Length: 411
Ligand SMILES: *Cc1c(COP(=O)(O)O)cnc(C)c1O
Image 1 (cartoon, rainbow, N blue to C red):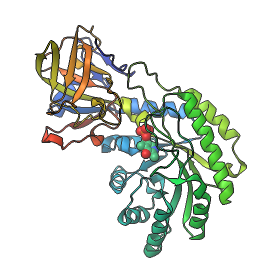
Image 2: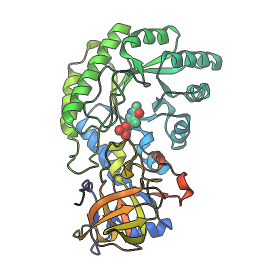
Image 3: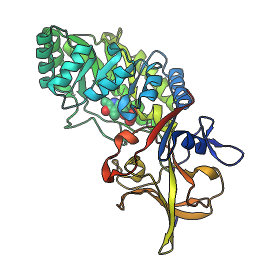
Image 4: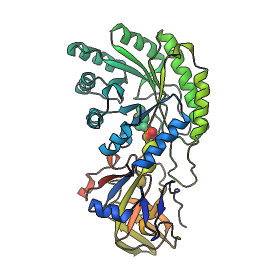
């Protein structure tokens, strides 16, 4: 029995020859230009369209980009110009963000396990630290005093709830992320008493949510929590980062998130917010929803073989570049990402095949028992949903295979 694939995201079509177009360019021509496969292509126009969709539905709310989703500099430079802030999670990402031309005043640095040298780099450059613990706050204050620079500190809150049904849980219960809500008011007072610049709250309750009702409920709870924490601390937060969690449909049967419904409900929740939040700026931080569907991973078939009645298309790419499509990036049960034969895009499926990578491990699968048009050695395979958590989230050094190239189109 063949296994279903996720739906190809909107915005992709074929030319008259049946060749996949990405940003209006033929996939085979893009590979020719890059010089070889494997290749990640990012359609900056599709990403720009996503940003415009956000603006349409979240009037008056700042948009931040969580750069760990994709920090390829040409993409980051393009996105940074169009958003209100960048969220980073390491000193390396700080360097990348600054190299992409980001204004340090619009960058916030979350993530557990920041070394003193990381805190120092952040304080020197003037980015906001989203503090993950009291220990981190105390170290930041001491480093600021030593440098003679006032640190900018927001408190990352570990809320007592999480987005229901979200793919990756990062809030609720015992967590390495953030400060338990009950401890937050005292920590805010400590920051203020030390003379640091308190920037507000960062409250992230989960990721990869496709159910608007779950996001609406989490956002309502987040606005309420920010209000009660601010009242308990006796200080109005300049910024409330409401987290993000907007998901994208990777798998069969999943539907795109109804962001219109989420935006309308958030406007209502904000209209009813506590008075202490009346002057606060609100932000949403997004990664995959902004860039995931804009990326395509192209890899070439180098062998076609049969084993016990099954057809295997063996490619020159795989999990070392696109770990998530192989099912090994947090998935419990492996399901097929949307995948196509680039030169026969939209053609009728004729045979059941398994598309595998070139790594010598059975984990390296790009599509399992999927129905595809006939494909042979030399044909290009396109793996969609490759714009977020692709190359940078994959074990590129594993097996020392050929490296992948990245390319922007449609700027
Ligand atoms: C990873 C992360 C994000 C981005 O998550 P997406 O699912 O890609 O939108 C946002 N905020 C924080 C704190 C994160 O750790």
